[in-house]
Length: 528
Image 1 (cartoon, helix red, strand yellow):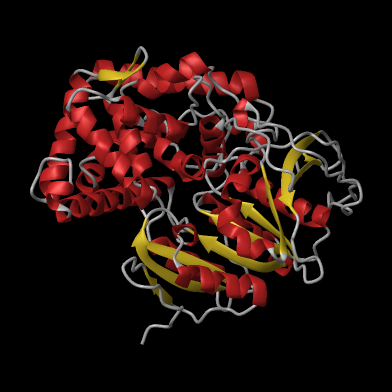
Image 2 (cartoon, helix red, strand yellow):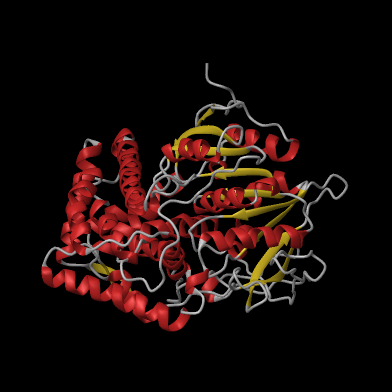
């Protein structure tokens, strides 16, 4: 885990779990611009047939006949709106009820670095109720997939990079660890130096407003998930009067530095792992893992990590399951409760010397397909994070923080602590310590926090509501497991969100939905 690998999973897990299988063609388009760089309208956006996704987008097959693709020309540098341009890849499925169509609903599924072109068609069935009256739209953000993608190391180099020890314990191991990061960053600069200064979230938010105009919508109706909530918050800050009906799900805490965010993730993943382990214990003999308590199961996982650090085991082909890859695989499995059976099986097999399943889960998190090709999710993730955050941690600062990370998570703490160095010598300076998401004058934004979310801890939803400002953020709590709430299938959450997006009915502040699989889900209710 030499980079911010766990941060990548916000999109990577979605791509794996949703089995997205699409991409778009570069169906030729341009957008007229005024002197201020504002897009002048949708006339030149030409929608056409979609092509199969590129390897950078994660691969897959051509989407069905309902899907159309296009490209939109935007400035590479918004400070020079008449200068060089790049093309953003767009995809849409038009609303079924043309008579009562509300406009477009634009999705960002997170990451940063996830391809919306690939993810939306695979996820569309989960948003079928919204497609009745909205065109479902997504895109590859700048630096991602087909949209001026950031590229760094090649597939063979990435195999070694993601297998390498990312929790060094000796000076010699530290030297190798830092050398791996240096080589990766050098490759990024050599191959993508022109776009690296321009892939940050503020530019992506300006792209969102170009997309809104190109779609012909007066307001941006938006569904942001994970990092998509940060992007949505920055958009609301820059263009509060242009916000239509918006939902933020699996919310990134806008008040935390990269260090604080990583520490929060360590606690979140540890919480989710504890919930997984307790569920296993509750199932008694049906659980394949050794241990009569959750703590005993966690202790066995830590034991497995130490054994793999000393001696990797059989993986896939000639690739071994290393400690880093196993931890990645465990993290990937905690993004959705539906993946818990795979985690249980993978841990059981690894304890028996077979690491294929955990390595496959790790591959999914890192964007590697079965042919050994990597998407650019890792490169884009690093580039966007480092373009956004000013934080640059020294070796001494990082090592001083490790005890706090280990206390937060015996399983994930070391990995996330060392990942703080991902941007240390990045060739582009960061834009902020924390993003400004204040949005006075914006329409209401429904902000959903999940109490069991490993990657974007629940507390972030409340912080987002506070920072959006009075009368803007409306908090909804989901008491459940996994990353995100709407895609859990919980009827209470979906009813609240659909009522807002389709009918404009803002849910009562502090609405609570509780996952209850044994009984029919309740309607949204306000707490007493």
